[in-house]
Length: 193
Image 1 (cartoon, one colour):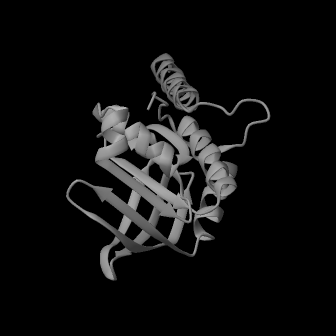
Image 2: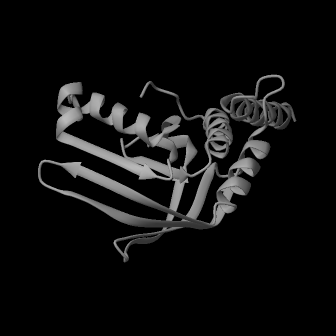
């Protein structure tokens, strides 16, 4: 009889400590901060509302100079708080040729950072990261987008970068804030760019 009671107590303590450990492993939102469900709803709503984004990309460097009409469509967006994933279909064409037509799934647990910035800021950050000098950027390479673009960029644990493009700066900032909160609550990190 004592063995059965002892086994039941050990089992109950084991279940309680396992459940407690799982609960404490998921960060809680700060007071007043959106919950994971709320953040994921914002992400899904905003990305689903993008529709078709069309812009012109102008490129100039020592080897080439030109422009390209780019069309991007994000569809079938699902931001799932239970699995901490964002899945969507990404379609992109350049010069009238389809270059991307794929289903994408991102695990926010694998995110190392989220950044919301203009396309110009992104070009400067990439140049700085690659060690390109200001003087080289001024004469060696130039890229411009019309209309101006705003990005929400995620660096993943494998150092790949995934991102979303917006024509509306406020919309990109809303998604950036929601994405940052979701990554934090899913256990991802926020490292410097």
